[in-house]
Length: 625
Image (cartoon, rainbow, N blue to C red):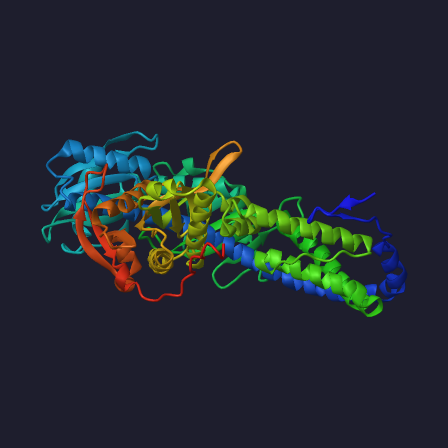
């Protein structure tokens, strides 16, 4: 009976297979008995060294992630204060219009958990509107006594009148609690009309720390630099309501109090992150503390830390030891086995290893179909590897390769929606309906497939991701899933390459008497939500945000600005042009009001007749497709 192969579907005859287990047992039995003792001794020493090195990196990453999360919260405060100052500078807020100010301040307080209060001061240092969030979450007017103290502090710490940047200062005592201040001038017509001041309080910081503790499933804390006072704790934030801090010796967390007698763990500690171990009562594992001295929120340096059960490190060490011992033994046995078994085993295993390495690096183009083997276990691996290669190649036709690579390396984290700055591109073929009317369905599909294949290759070559194809249009973006600090520049580079490719292809089409393809491209840069969006089993990796709408409307505006002899018109927002840099080739084309929007946008145009001879991927001729 013939059995079809999973890769080719062609039948092959049933063959006699030799068990690799039998071959290895006969060949390696004596070798294992002689070498196991020496190999174990070497592997134990190596596993301890490598495990402590690994834990050192993990410890540093854990605390650094906590620090980065807090710095992100501080950046949100900066952004909130800067946003209010920008609204004032743009005449969308007035100090005399207290009702509008109150709504704006309440909105910021609702969306920025690290901000405790917001106050607007005029040029004389008098407050116009002051809003305070109570521990219950209710936003109210700031009490008069606190407001008086706040005004005194504001006058003593006033920023330079023309300073455009936000300034942190503190800590300061207001009532029973301690706050840090973030102030920014309200600049209009080159002069300062006052200040907007945000208060970052102890209670707000504790809300942030509590959130970090829940997300990391660990206990996070913050201590004064001398470790005498606790002023934030992820599980006991209520201890700081109305207080600036609690003495460590009096804090109700018994585990945290034991930090005073902790012993350093030099094998895990690094230059910045310090590790300590506390022996638990009646426990052999105790707890591991990770601490780091940091400075942020405008305060004096403080200690950021976290602790967790020591059993986790011990289990990690045990698993690493077992894995390393098995790996060293397996490696040495495999090397010696190659001497006895020769090329008939080493050659197919080498090819399998090469494919496995290509899979781990996600180099799908380097993966080849492996030949079958007469050794059963090797043959099973060959069939499985070939099947996996086929499945992965098919899968990447529907999902971007970069996203698949991130899913393989980091699991669900790669799919989780995140907000970040990206650059969006929309393309659309001009008059495609008229072109398709002269073509059959098969010819239309061939034309679109060639067109989209060329565009997708250019997008991929510049680090972009194709989001979707809609009709005769394409949406792509740069800056996700992999971070790209020059995402706008790469998007403009892709547009330039597309323009060169389309122009070259149109020359060939005109020589053959075929209609030319004319293309509109819109580019915009901004912050958007990027990740897997959808419900149930129907999800897609896409972009959500106003930046998408602006990019699409810029592409549509090409109808107004495209000359009759233009093959391609590329319109970009001034934001994208600024991000792309002065050498991007984008030139101002005036201020326009995009369809469906009220505020005008500064539009820039890429002169495709000066696009240059970039290294681009040409569009294939129909005869080559």
